[in-house]
View 1 (cartoon, rainbow, N blue to C red):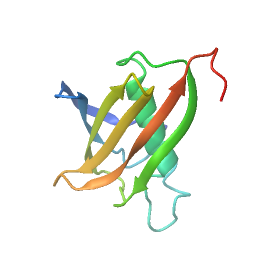
View 2: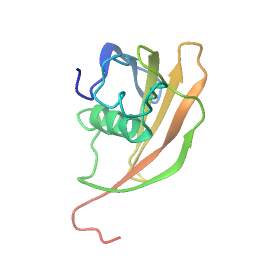
View 3: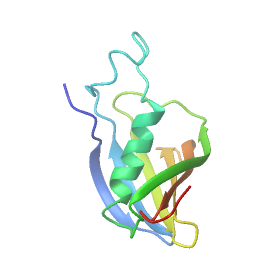
View 4: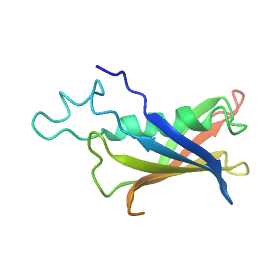
Length: 121
């Protein structure tokens, strides 16, 4: 069984940041329990993928603080090919993410916020 990492098919810069072409492995560790008989990619895994792929590409402050404007509008299942667009708003300390299906329809989106270690929230 695969752990919880996507298959990265391609990575390319776009006008605002970077786009990833991803495949959702059919044997992800989360699928047997989320949900039996109808496996769906959990939202927390989507957030983790966005964060993990953003960290090495943007100058993110060290401390995660919040998620805002979070929307899950289309389910993602095993074997799906999806796109992930990431951009970084340095003034706000936020990564914007959007997962889309192969037809360009939004699956999920939101903003992940960060703060320097010295900041208090």
